[in-house]
Structure formats: C-alpha cells, structure tokens
Image (cartoon, rainbow over all chains, first blue to last red; front, side, top):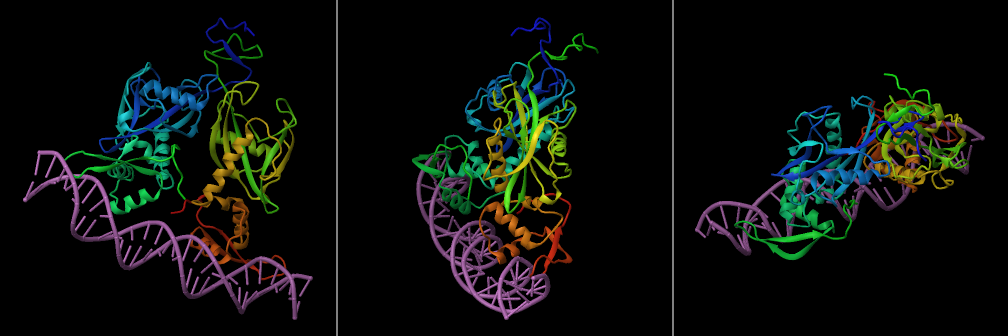
Length: 231
Length: 231
DNA sequence: CCAAAAGTGTTAGCAGTACACCCATGT
DNA sequence: ACATGGGTGTACTGCTAACACTTTTGG
C-alpha cells in the first residue's frame, strides 16, 4: 500500500488531526542519603537548556511500556528496572510545537545498577535531589509531583521501596531507604519487627562487614514479584 | 500556513506516524442492588454488534479530562460526575484499524442522576452488572477489570463510594452501597460508628420516610471535596 | 578501650470486630 | 399487632508506638 505522498517530508497523513504520543519517565534512586531523580538537559528547542524528564516519542508499533523501557535504557544503560505507569498528561499547549500527549512512568532503581550517560538528543544527564530541582521543561514539574506523591503513598501498602535496594541488603540499609523516603527517623526495633513480619525477605546467611562495627546479616527478597501489596 | 494537501481526504500530515488517541470511560453505578456499568453497542465496524465502553477520539485542542466528560455527557446526558484517570492502554493491535491509544477513565454516579440515551454512533446503550458482562470489543474487558480493582481497593482508603449516592442519603443507603461493592454483609453498628467517625458526613436534620418502618435521618457530605483519603 | 552500627522484648493505647435489643412507622 | 428497617453500647482482640541496653567489630 504505497502512498503518493510518501516522497514528501510529511508522508504520514490522516483524515483527522492526530496528536503525538510520548513516554516520559520519572526515575528515582537514592544517592547520598537523598531521594534523587534523573533529568536530561535539553539540547534542542523548545526549552533548550532547560532540564526535562527522559523520554521520547512512541514508535508506531511499540507498546507503551516498551517505549518507556527503551528510552530509559538509552539514557541510563540499565534494563530490567521497576517501571509502572503513572498517568497521562495531555493538556493542550503543554508542548509548543504540536499537540503532545505524554504517558508518564514511575521507575525505581538502586544507585549501584545505574551508569548514566547522556544520550543522543540530550546535552547532559544528571541526578537532582527531589528537594532541589532545577527549572523544568514542559509540565514536568507537575509530572514529578505526581510521581513523588505516588511513591510516598505506596510505601504504606506495598513493598515498592525495596526496588531502591540492590539484590542483597542489610536491614540497616533498608531502614535508611525508608527514613530517606519519609524524611524522618524510624524506631529501629519496630522497623525490624515490621520488615521481618512482611514475609518478603529472607536472610542469605552471610554477613556484611562495613566499617568498624558489628557485621550485619544480609537479606534478599523472597519470591520473584517486584512488589507485594500488604494486607 | 496552508497546506497543498488540505483538499484531499487525509489533509493532516506528519513527518512521523502518529497514533490516534481516544478516551474510554468505565462508568459504574448501583442499580437493583448490583454494581453495573454502562456499555454501548457498536453500530460500526470493527466489532460491530459487540458492546464497548463509551468513548471517542480526543479533539486536537481538547484536554483529556474534558474529552472523557464530553463523551460521557453525549452518552448519558449527565455532567458533573466523578471522573478520575485510570490508565492508558496502548498495545499495538488493540484496534484493527490503526494504532489507537486509549486513556481510560473511571466514573461514578448515582443512578438517580443518570438518564442514558443512545448516542450517534452507538446502536444502543445499556447497563450491565459487572458480574454478567457481554462479550466486549477491543481490550475493554481488561480496562474494566482494572477499573473494578481500582474501585474496590479505593474503598479501603478513601470515600470514593460516596460518589455512588445522591446528595442526600441515609446511613442505611450508604451501607447498602458498601455491601454491594464488597459483596458481603457488614455489621450495622460497626459500619455506622465507622461512617460517623470519618467526619465526612453530617445530618441535615431531616428525616426520610420510606416504607413501613421508622424514618431515617438524612445525611449529606461535608466539605466540597469529591473524595477524601483516610488516615 | 573507644566509637559505631547490629541486634533484641515488653508494655500501653487504640482501632477493629463481634454481638442483641428497643424504636418508630405503615399496613 | 405485626413486619420492617432505624438506631444504639460494650467487651475482646490484635496491631501500633514508645522505649534502653548488650554485642561485635575496626581502629
């Protein structure tokens, strides 16, 4: 089915106007005891020089989840991280070029697995603490706010935060993740009691020696499910 | 900026292929003591004769929420109902015509406010109990499953179910809604204690006489927020 | 031996659950 | 008078939150 217009520079034609569809990813990690997220510096207009979420246009035969994973892999070199759909942002005018509808994703990964490099159309990629974000392109401040709220509220009823830890971890590290996320101190005994009652972690039997203090037991997740929902 | 192709039947042209974007709405209500949802019978191919969620294409300058509300108003004649974005479904091939990405919404309304009439491109519109759905077009069975799960899980931590009641209601009516949703009986005293501890409802002072029994106190929601999140 | 994080139980309060009878009305 | 749903309190149980000391290592 050839098209007589396919030799022009706008060969894809429709009876009604179509929006462009992108995915954008809010990738959180914990670095330096702070919740941080990945941004790229835009190398092109619009918003050239501003920071924006990593993301890009959905290929015409590509599933949305695959697109988010692909864009993220291109930016971070990491595959197989936690990814969930967050919501879709489509206010007319949010992109000055054309109507763009963005399907946003929430992603989590432990710092250890990430080796960020700037991609093709990004001038730079960098981590920013959620508490100290630069001016953002498009409506990405709003997307980030939604992602952050979702992450925090999911702490209450799921094990989503475990995605911020590597495969093996100590209870102290787990507690640090939670304390960073809720931005408060947590009672050590209560936390450990809670964590072990989840039936989502098991001791590997190994010990980890770090620093001049008693070695800590090493744990890993039981089951292969990425996140569990509590009670 | 005129375009030399605007007199053809496909005048909207792009450098890269663009998907079509629709909104689809899962509108729940309670009828005959059962959770039911609104479906339309498709009058055109594809899936002609099958039942589908009400919805349609997003206008190029229309916000997504507005599109969902508009499509629903066209089908039900109701405005100002509870509407929240559910998720976006975009698997390639879900629509055999072209790539269509659908932003799904969850809507709730009390039966009293609904006067459903078949719209333009629908052969018919009808209510179906969630437990007895007909064969569905596209991936709408999946969309409905997600909507149903979301509704049920939100019962635990929000007052979303109040959206299934009219402005004023009795505690007995409220309890019936909850019993229908969880598909189980609830202890009357505990339910009433819980409902009144929410600080989300207040007695109007009026009584409602219905049937041969003691009249019931009438309540309404306090505050103007559509739903409140609990603790 | 000192500093630092690992590890460990008990108690008190509160929220959720189970449970039974009288009240006001219409017929 | 009877059938129907409206309206009310108490006791138990299980989860949550507060709280301090000993252990093991590295320096």
